[in-house]
Length: 96
View 1 (cartoon, rainbow, N blue to C red):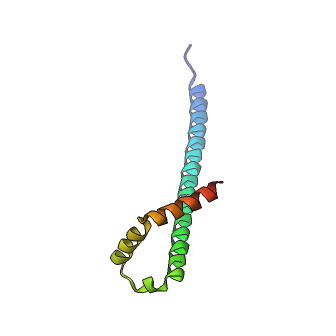
View 2 (tube, rainbow, N blue to C red):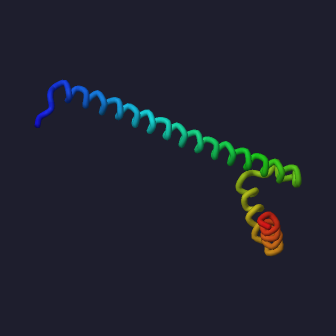
View 3 (cartoon, one colour):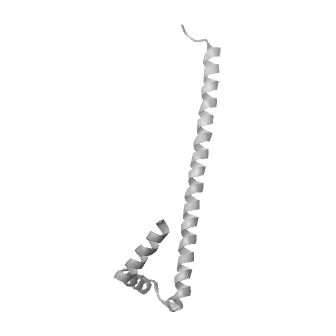
């Protein structure tokens, strides 16, 4: 049994409305993903700034250091066994 022109138009209208609903749903999901991604970047930026500020407040001498020597110094300090032990201890206290 073939559909009448009116039935086909009604079906087309329903399908078009459904397509628009799915497009709006997709747009909302994409906007939500962007919002969450921005929030993660903002939180990361805040964390980096506050930790960098903490390092500068503890060792004000590093304010004048260039970036490469600073990174080298941090690598040297953070690779020391005693420092590694302190870091692990702080992490285990945080977990427990």
